Length: 461
Image (cartoon, rainbow, N blue to C red; front, top):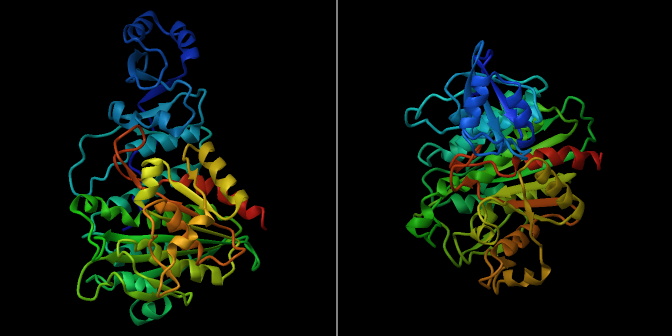
């Protein structure tokens, strides 16, 4: 799968959209011809968000006006593509961020229509003056990540996810290595064990890149993503209701692949490594069993307390290899636990970090770009819950509490002490359609990470 070109942008416009806040409505009405002013007054336009656009005639055709209240986020513009008539529009200059407007418009224009005809034609937008070309690239990348998450598992298997990673690497002139078969079993034994029960074999993709201005000793950013293309739960089988969305269990890989794509497009003066574990957790005679003991790349042994806790097994080998390169900053993302959703709901990815400065930078960036994260603790008091009587540790906790925390503590065992590390446990799915956030796959946390990384790597350069 390759990134789609945005089809919601236009070169020329047919009409103008005026963007107003409540305090601007009276002055705007006073400057309109009486007929147009009366039309807007009759529509009850107040400048608050959520109202449909109001169309009014002009000497050149038809314009529209929308209200965004006090909203400064991209989502203030998220409904425009579906709410405006299907023609090309320009945005009149106003009290808003042009990049937020473009991003919000494009995110709201997204639809996963690969297996059906589009519901109806959508409005298109010309890029406003002052907008950054990188914004459209970011929107295209979020579309790409959403497409990956939304793709059915029969379409996106481990090989197809690895191929998507290869396309991104080739487009950025990055080095790409795909590890499979016997080499995978030796280099990433835990990843191999997770995929042993599937007819489609597992693989690990490794991308390496450096910016055009990166010297040999430039900061090394290492990214790891869980790419479980479908999760049955293994022999500890999920109930059918819990399997309905398990095509999204590669959401962490989609986010990290999108993040790497944006970082390379910005040509930051860094070295970048991306590792994705591309695997399916299925059932067969060769699947791992509860009670099995696995060896990991780190040499630690893991007793399998539950085969449905497979994502941490995929990540532990990736984190181990990443730490072998002594990264400046190590980040991983996974749709790891239902416990994080119980604690924070679907919209807030859980953030864990062993470094307060890293956590603060990520939280601040998330707030600044309306892509929030919420920090949970790596509480050491729960670490002993991962004990096993026959192995170095168990892959699940012995207690029915704090599942997201104990999963993060498990991963921390495979992070070399002294390495600055953050782990994001994300849902990767919009439960319902809202402006700019259609129901389905979502790259939660991507914009927060993208905003924070330049600051974090500069601080260690």
